[in-house]
Image 1 (tube, helix red, strand yellow):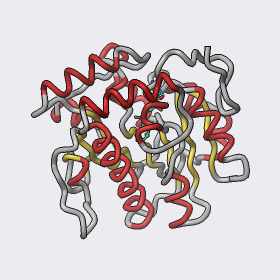
Image 2 (tube, helix red, strand yellow; image 1 turned 90 degrees about the vertical axis):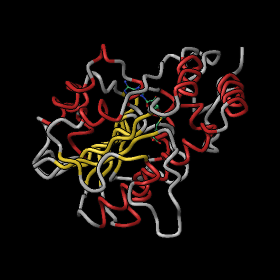
Image 3 (tube, protein in one colour; image 1 turned 180 degrees about the horizontal axis):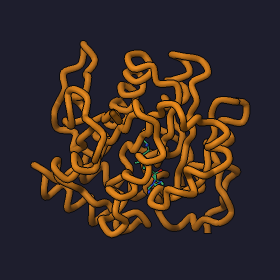
Image 4 (cartoon, protein in one colour; image 1 turned 60 degrees about the horizontal axis):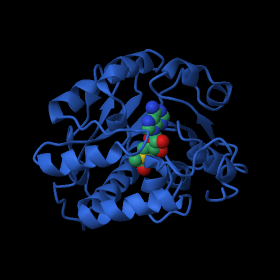
Length: 267
Ligand SMILES: C[S@@+](CC[C@H](N)C(=O)[O-])C[C@H]1O[C@@H](n2cnc3c(N)ncnc32)[C@H](O)[C@@H]1O
């Protein structure tokens, strides 16, 4: 049995691969086990698009934060399914643009939360707590989240590359409606979501692979993903391939990431 390192909580099984730790490995992070690296290497060899999709998704996240902070004046973020911190984390991007921007990270994965808390120990404007976003009320009532975020003012909620881990049976649309009820007008919701549209075979293989982890992937169509925004009104350019959302000037979007992404505002 592998020895568990400092960043790993005691209550996890290092023999079961985790999507959070595989994503960390694919993005060049170090908080992963042999079992994660093996499965991720196999995925990268058989489906090279996956690593590029992860990078495209991460670049989308960076552009969303930059847009929300600089163009929309957002000063607080609630990042649900935040993952294991790698380079270019939400608080780093946002606080570099506007010092004092507040960021609450939430993840179901104990490694993601432990590594985030270690990283944020000296940061008074950011925190990380463990939570299951499908059980949103305890997250919204969490004392650390409440102490950091002011729910009477606009908050940007990030659901970036996480909702495809939530099956229909957990009613993701209802989760977002309950979340919306806790937010002030002018709040934002950013979603990126894996799709099978236009890539049925590839998506089937991803779903089959994900069954080896505790978080099975549930790809959705563009229409289903748009429906998740509910009362949030999509801002331009709407729900698009993540590479096409406010692309940087020197980058030509591929339109082939396999992820849809968009940002909505609450009127
Ligand atoms: C692919 S990573 C995305 C990380 C980050 N949002 C990003 O885009 O770079 C998905 C993360 O969602 C987390 N996750 C999956 N299901 C969750 C749930 N029900 N509640 C909270 N986090 C969840 C996983 O543990 C993982 O860290």
